Length: 418
Image (cartoon, rainbow, N blue to C red):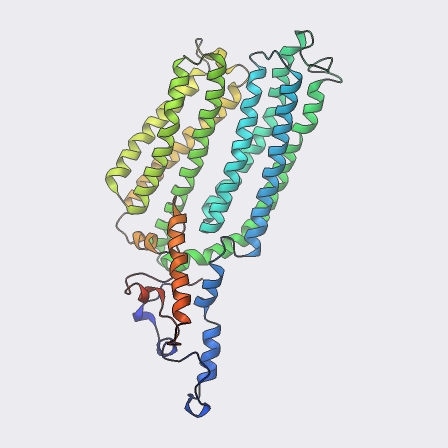
């Protein structure tokens, strides 16, 4: 828990006055010297220094990350295999077949995002983000199931083209290209299901482990714990929104470029890429610094984003653009609705976070051990340097134990001991 001079007892203060060297005569040592030396060796702060040098210090976190890496490796391998088979055997690709890369691009982006999302959640001890990843994994499970009939529908167009499937007699049906692809595409739903079950089993233990981190960071105040939970949820939603927006724009870019690069759809999609990234970074900065003007501007952008995705959802059935979404209406509709839901949730949660500004949570943000941010790597690097300086101070010629982190910084920072 946070420590400062007002919370330290006599034995903790006396530890700083005891030398660590063994050059003191036995007669000069106090009677409780050995007991206090053992206490120094078991100091949780020293243990914390050792553990903080690793992004994932516990075995549970390594196993959790290992399951995510296994899932990403299998799914990406299947996606590349399917893409390679389609490109190799189908030469004159029709409008529907050109939509197959959309599915594969989304799969690959989803797995890269999933790895980064889980790693960030584990090192930031953000249990909310891990729970949201479970929801994300279930969505990808549904998406992988929908991909199978949509791929079949796309390949049926090539059945009427002589030699349309290369060495295969037909694109669909017995002994066809689709039969081979189906055997591959049935693997992702199984992998997603098994990994989701594994994540659910480990979630209970991760929740217990991360619960102490929140207590150490913000204390036992119910109001601060609620504010910190809102902040964690908001940050997690922003990262999820980043993937959703970029994946949707990537799919639109593939479809629009295959249709006509001069269309307005193509230009709007290109402009949306930097806007999404700038919005996410600006909103994350405003949350951490409790900057109301920037946060208000982000709220306006959220409303504009909701309007944009509603517009994109409507274009799926407009006569002038419905040909662009041949065989991808379900996929693009799911992404549009998913993005709208996340944006609406982010909007209302932003209002709650703004209401929490000025209630003391910013002190937790300034803590060097707080890793729940969009740009925690530079802050964490500074904290690692502070720990190294503390280690050097401990082994200095004075031979005394180092002062606590808050004291090294002029007693203006709170110390967190894990």
